Image 1 (cartoon, rainbow over the protein chains, first blue to last red):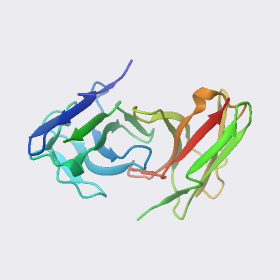
Image 2 (cartoon, one colour; image 1 turned 180 degrees about the vertical axis):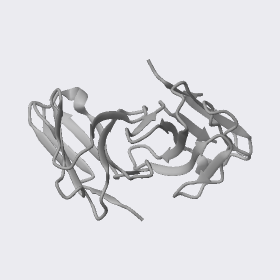
Image 3 (cartoon, chains in turn purple, blue; image 1 turned 90 degrees about the vertical axis):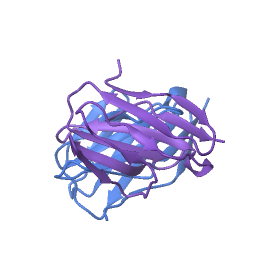
Length: 111
Length: 110
């Protein structure tokens, strides 16, 4: 069973729409992350959080924003989607030095 | 910043063959991890290595944490079609942040 959940799995949306990608984990992990990945390509860290009310930008600049009001929830928002935002978005969480647990991802297509 | 080197970008092998993948870094890591990503899914942890020199197996997979703490390898023995996917190495620092390699796409011919 999955301990980290991402919804929706697939999303096709028109240019200019506001979207929120949901990520929730049931493991009580303090640290959570958002990665952007084009098909078959490397993972790019776009946001991370080390706890409630803590968010930081990652290595790849992104027009998206995140919030961390509850430990288990780390949503990502795009205020105005553009075709260049088409990609797969992966959420992950971690605790200690045992690596990250990833969700199944959201495949976003902006038309 | 820290970078991990994985090459080549793609590997093509015949079913039943063994394959080995290397990952090198200019930085020292406390933990080395290997992930596999199936198409349309998130990466899944295969093996985690916590001590320099450690050799760990998980079924047909064997991985080692290099003595210098700057490299790791993953070996898959007797490959099968479901081994197809992208294999990422990752190094974890003392602050728990992961640095990922660019991944190797493995194709297995039946």
